Length: 280
Image 1: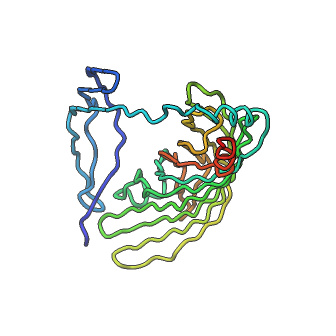
Image 2 (image 1 turned 90 degrees about the vertical axis):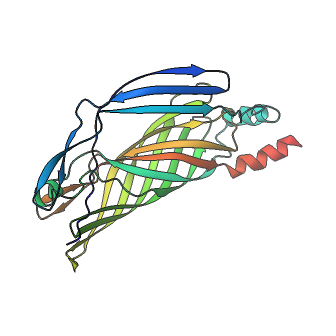
Image 3 (image 1 turned 135 degrees about the vertical axis):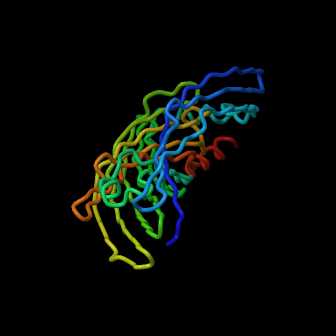
């Protein structure tokens, strides 16, 4: 029997530190304390024992500021900004960036039948691909996205793989723009094509397939130094499907994950074309 094992634990920490800041540099030295550092680990499929995280961690970091937005509102940006505030034009965009997904709830299927598996295992890092339209006058976006998500668990010769091809249609509204920080909130509908594969001691179990639709919540923010006239920008998306679960052996497998699209590069080709025309 293969004796590999891993577990994911969420622990609260208390931290304190000191920092020093200059116009270009930020340095930090801190200490983080883990009040409850005890955790249970499995030595076999049926035998567990207690283990301990370190009581504390020392953090040391240095950040250097790089100015990349100087001149972002120079000619012809104000002209393009004024146009986009008056009309819902030039709104098509394409975006792509890396994402991950964090489980937020336990799965009875795992905790009851396979407690030695990592119930809180995170997904692989996956791309999020988006195509949409930005109604700039009303600060409103409608978009479609695709995310291929894979989550794996492996311990003591039992392997589980959940593969999701997730397609989403979403609409969200920008709330305000604070010096280039523009948060948004909205909702969507997901179509999920899911395959569940399991192998127990080299015996492949029957594959399970699921197709379902489920609502989602979406929120995040844009970083846009040119107000509404950016030809490209950086966007962060967070997405949550509160009702997405699978059922197997009368038990629930939770896919109620918080997706975190770290940094998505968003390109507005129509705006870029207009920017060049106005610059002449």
